[in-house]
Length: 441
Image (tube, rainbow, N blue to C red; front, side, top):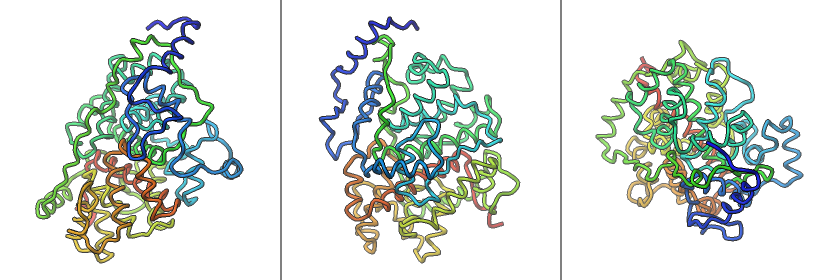
């Protein structure tokens, strides 16, 4: 596609910045505290939204410039994208052991997906989740790798220009992001024609990781760094072409509400065999460890994060386990339901009490009917967990503000971290279709 002259480009940029739009958020006209930010429907709206994100106020305060400089120095300096607000927030609010979020600059020799395709997957996940902060970062990385503005436009509007393997990976990433509860063998089969089994697992692993990051950066309303620029010289008819990545209507998370039916489905899931490869042995004798041990660096980092998330921090341990269970129920991630259920049973909760935790957390539910013993602060945290798990696009300022009335900022940050960890674990285990009956044999 042809671009336009530099003189016209400036006119177009000015015109785009003044386009009337019902979704647009101006720096001097913030959205209502109870309203989530709107989803840009095309690239013109998206670029404008990315620019506007520089002006937003973080839902948890950013560290002061002096503290930011100290944190950056202590962590070994800036990364490839410079000093980023995401990293600063993690270091400021989370325990040191959890601040990496499972990510590392150390490459994993078992991961073979080319970096550009991996970043495009991150872009797609962020577009689906309407995470403007992560979208901006992936735009910067893709352009630095040589991806053109025209190719970025195609990534949002028309995948026909991409190779068959890329198209298959894109489609799977999109679905695993917004509907992990619907993944079946039929979603894996198109990938088998394009990728080795280990590469399919890598795609699921990355998509899970990106979903985790989105839930951290977007729910906390982290602003974009000022030095980034989001503009385009494409014709206006291209920039206003509708996105084919965003989800117009999110599918409902219809949970099983009958206890006997849930038990039956639970027992069926226990007998599943993984459709993705497992290592012969892992750092622990579980199917999850065998799955993630396919990646000796990245997989071990996430296993360590999952372990540390149960032993480090200021959030009550039982609440962490309840949050993990509610997130797994919301995602219908059966293996992770099993793990959380086992932990809660050891704490003395009955099976029926555990089952009803999800009913308490669902929007509009009455907590007193099923769990009169739960404190209002616990109910608030579980409802937030369900919402951020199932519908991250709908988080608004008031969600965090309400949590801050009963939890301190470090506890709120850890709650978001725990939900993000669940987003990763839920997706990678459901993509594999893990069972657990063999763990007790």
